[in-house]
Length: 364
Image 1 (tube, helix red, strand yellow):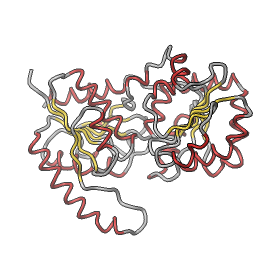
Image 2: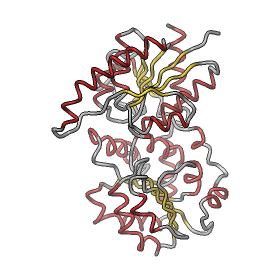
Image 3: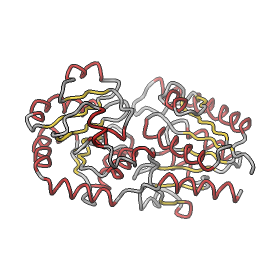
Image 4: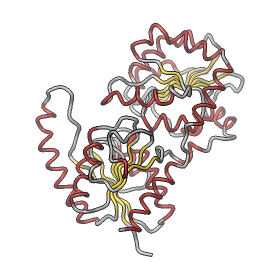
């Protein structure tokens, strides 16, 4: 069997990086001799996270357009030209069978150049409302793997396959890990555990909310795992105690999900997909600061099917404590949210995406 070669690109945030790594891992299971290369944006977190996962990575000099006029925007045409030229060079040298993009700045120039060079490209769109890059790339893409229905207003319908979002395998497997997870985080097995997730970098408004509500929450006789993000850890580590575990970053996501009874989370596409599989009651607090208000749309897709609660940042001061306390007291509501969000899970997503990639290389 001949040796296949794959280039993957996705970065800027964990939401783009981890799906790319999950796809690479699945392809590696199927083709142990395959060669892999990741392409990311210089100075972004993928430059650390991808090598940690055991894959080589090359960086492009690229960044997104800022919403306000800035020096970075003036540099954008130069960065884009440089990234297109470098992408061409990478593709020419590596000779991939297929190029896979999971979103983020670097995937734009790479996939654009791959399609110009007649290399098959696969887009993996994680959100219920696609970003500009993927919309522009979709015309020339060989296949578009999506996680939500009704995206044919953005993408050519004949190229779209509903697969779901790729999720790390260890997250899916949390059955029977609760006791081990409670011990791992040094928690009390007799108390309910609240898990607060702000994304890999953290979420300032969510952190401010937890700080403000902390005393009141602890009155409910619960314990909290609070992932505040590496940008904010120094500000919040003072709250570490028997009942509050403040973490910059979580390595063992399977354990935090196993330990949690109720979850408060941002609504990035990867988080929404993971939480659907995990199937715990969730309060989504979407970030209003992302392009096209993706996160609100992602959360709404779940909330419309009665699978979660949605609180907008603007309503936190007036509504949070009422909503949170009501959920904590209502076992029936917790059970209903758990069951409904699980119905929306697509645990086979990574396998389905790999199937589409395999089809492409076999037909090539």
